[in-house]
Amino acid sequence: MLSAIDILGAAIGLVYIVSEYRASRWFWPSSLLMSAFYLVIDLQARYYANASICLYNFAMSVYGLLVWRGLLGRGRKADAPERPITSCPRRLWPLLAGVVALLTVLLWWLLRLTGESQLPWTDGLSSALTIVGMWMLAHKWWQQWFCWLLVEPLMIFLFLRAGLYASALLYVVYTVFCILGLIRWRRLCTPAGTPS
Picture 1 (cartoon, rainbow, N blue to C red):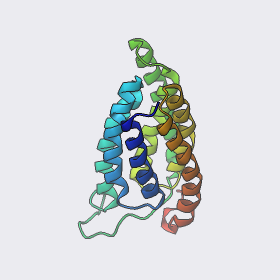
Picture 2 (picture 1 turned 30 degrees about the vertical axis):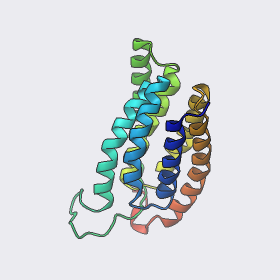
Picture 3 (picture 1 turned 120 degrees about the horizontal axis):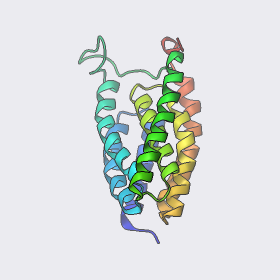
Picture 4 (picture 1 turned 90 degrees about the vertical axis):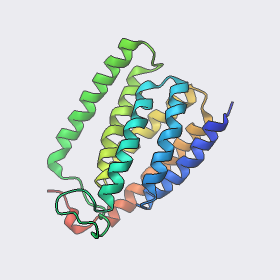
């Protein structure tokens, strides 16, 4: 059965993914709103790691908006142009993979300890990938789409299992946008953003 909050959250999610695909600064306000809605949805579905990620996403949305606008970071000025799409430095890839692995195990353990999560392993892995993906997105690295390509199928499974069909359908749409976003952002990547 579709709930009003599930449908409204999915509608906000469409604005969110289109804004992310376009690398629009409106992505971050839609991210704030979406985080608030999905906090409620995840709590109702008892996906507690994902619910806590909504709080993290809320904070990262503020951080990302400031970074994209050029207001944070070394040598940034209030009149700086918006940050371009760049590439994640290669030296960070092992660190990011390690963070995902460590967070997945830690979240799985915490969720198993509480006994409240319906699927602690899937909940933990999707949350770990989201933490890293949002951080990469805040830095406007095109490779952030790889995190979402892994997260979206997990979220489809979680939402279908909880009977949240509008949200599951939204994540099917997200999967398509991830592929398109990966292609578009890679093409828009500036030469100064080549891997180091």
